[in-house]
Image (cartoon, rainbow, N blue to C red):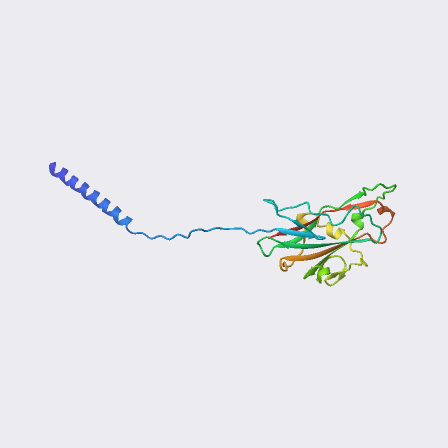
Length: 226
C-alpha cells in the first residue's frame, strides 16, 4: 500500500510540474497587430438659397431645414392682366459632400381673395390661370453674363424658356410637384458649387373679371439629397 501511495504522489508531482511548464511555454509565444483609430465619418449637405439677392441657409444648429426664407413675390403689389414678375435664385451646396441631387417642390397652391379692401372680388382661380417658367443658367445669372442652359418648365426653344409667355406656360406644371414625394428633379452637377435660376410668373393678358381681387399662394422649396 505504501508503495502505491508513493507512486501516486510521484505522479501528482510530475503532473503539476508538466502543467506549470506548459503554461509557461504558452505565455512566451505571442503575435499581435492593432489597426487603431478607425472612424466612419459622414459628410454634410447644407443649402444656401439666395433669392432676389437675399441669402437664406438651411443649416441652423442641429436643424438642416429652414422654412422661413423670404418670399420672392410680394402679395401687397397688385397686378393687372399681362403683368410679369420675375425672381432670381442662386442655389449652392455649402456642405462637405460634392455631388448632391437638387430638386424643387411646392406647397399646394391656394386661391384666396386679396387682403386689400375692394368692392369686388371674383371667384376665378389664379392658381389655375397663372403662367410660369423655370430657367437655369450656366456661369451666373443673366445680369452677370450667364447663358441659358435648361428650360425646366415653360414653353421655349431648346434650352431657353420664353419670357414673353407667347405660349401658355401654366403654373400647374410646377404645382403638380406639391410634395417631397412628387418633387421635380433638376438633374445635373453643381458648377463651382452653385446653380443659377430665374422664375417668371404672369397673369395672362386675357384674364377676365373673375380674377379681379384674387390671389394665388404657394411656397417654393429647394431640396438637396444624396
